[in-house]
Image 1: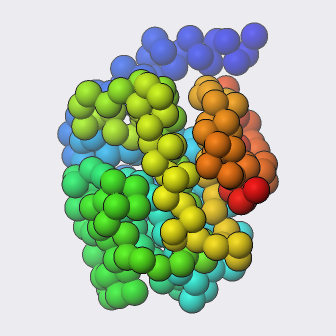
Image 2 (image 1 turned 90 degrees about the vertical axis):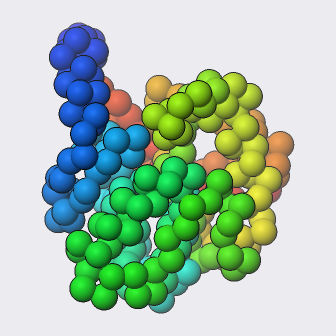
Length: 225
């Protein structure tokens, strides 16, 4: 009953407020980092997956490791990785998100982009040919076409083209020693995503899950079959 009331409240009051709030550039503090968030960029303050993933990454030993985030958005996860002394590559298909990430590194670290590379890239297209130790992705997971930049962080294509491209390219940037993590939520078609992974010889192994208010988030480790 409580979950139902929370969902009604979200749809009636919270969602319209968030949509209004995100129409302008905002400055917010999230997990100790001051972030500039511009329109069309995924805002980690309002969506549970970002902070859940942040807290998970904070438990990992990633010092001196090659760390790649696909779809960096505001840069929050990559800021954490840099703070933990990883060698960071951040990318996003959205040019505005790329700019946001660069600005947020400059705001939060005096050394700016030292040991950090921030790139505009459609998944792996413009990523240097490296084998990464850690790859993290908080993907768009609604099976619908992207018609506007606002939908880049949400829609993965009617046939899951995002996931097809991700899993078909993953082997070129990882090996059996790499840790590849993907976060999903219970409002997406997880089984459908698992099937796409399996068709490219990968499985999704559940590492941890957490219910936050009315939504359950799952962090999976992606392994080759």
